[in-house]
Length: 148
Image (tube, rainbow, N blue to C red):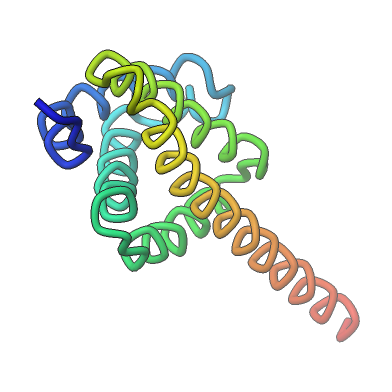
């Protein structure tokens, strides 16, 4: 049977979510370890579904909405940009492991390329948005101080 992102991502969705949540809780640093598991499961589920839309349908709308939401959540919780970037890298590790077990050797380049396109977009968009929100927060504080 030919490799199908849609088929594998749908069939392995629960496994991807649970493995990613586990890695976030144990390998992504203190901030992620302190988050409630159910919150991590919810945000990971949204991210997995949004990334599916990029990988399978070339649709970036869901990931853009997710990035807006997660940026606000993580800034309010005091996360570092590097912590969230590491979280996305852990997704790559989980997904590559699963995909490699379902792909023929000749399909690997295409699989890795599509995954990298998805994650490069997601991480760049998140980083830009995170930086923009951080700068706005800083400017608001500076304006407040100057009025004193």
